Length: 239
Image (tube, rainbow, N blue to C red; front, side, top):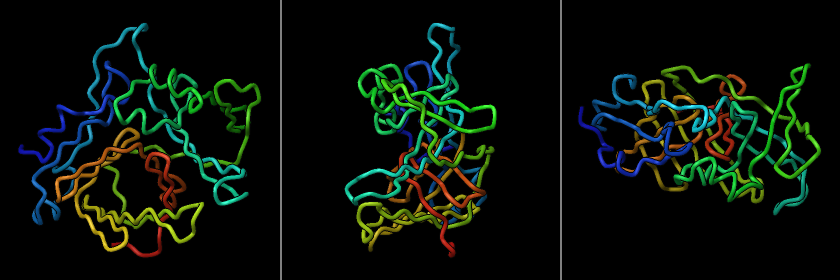
């Protein structure tokens, strides 16, 4: 099958080190009006390519995400700010989305960006606590846990994120359809394409040839989604 991303294999990001490529390869059928009208399961896949691992070279796997609501002083003053954590099965978490998506492996990211890593745990009453590397106290800020992403997940809503530091600033609106199409709007700019979500990632491929692979979480029956460290809220209208 001809893909829009034949050259993407050669520059696929190594999400979790050399042994594992998770969500880094996006295959998409020809992006035209016919393709966009077909069920996306036949047109688009987000795939992870894994090699056999030993205990010595095994890397952690993402088991979910957590959106924290933290009261702190920021550029917009004292307010509640949203923070997204990617949770791994070894009890660690990270906020270094940009580092991992750029091809930096877990070991390197932990060493070079240790302030964006930490530990997490679930208590006997299902309470979530966490602490950053170098800290001794566990925190229990209000938070939302992501939902499992099933194979072939489809959304049928629009999601928008507003800046927490500037109420007039928007990060744009993503409108997803259950046929696998997506429209992204920011100001007068409009991009259309296709999407697929799998195993903690979402792949976006637009008609103009641009592509994105992002860490992806869904929360509260689709009320919220997160793409990397950005939290987007479902709107009343859909595209």
